[in-house]
Image (cartoon, rainbow, N blue to C red; front, side, top):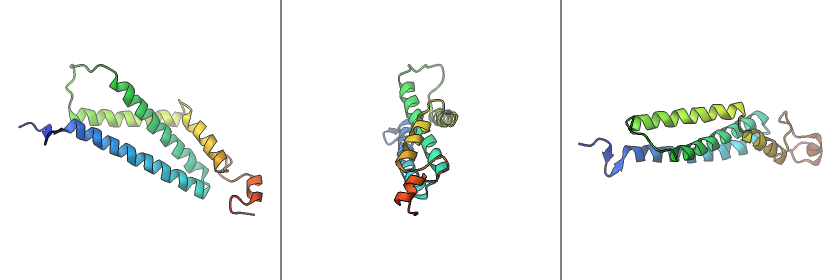
Length: 137
């Protein structure tokens, strides 16, 4: 009995499908957190959401690059290894994002903070407040 093949679907495909679902959930979570940070005018949350977006982007980029590398038969390819490598890659990309190595999070943060009228401290600039955009007068 082949335990790696359930109803014509390999466990590797199931792992990839789960990873894709997790990525879509992360994308939805990013949009929700971005809206929440803008609504609350929370500078820290906006920075965190931008870092998470950069981590997702780096993870997707890394996975596409890794897919172009020829696989070796030196190590057995099994679902446990795929799960471990996937988790390791996600953590590596998250750490790279936190270090600002690519700079995407910082650029995105600057653009979104201008768009939502947030200053570096998370408070709308004086000109925005006088115009009534932030709800204060």
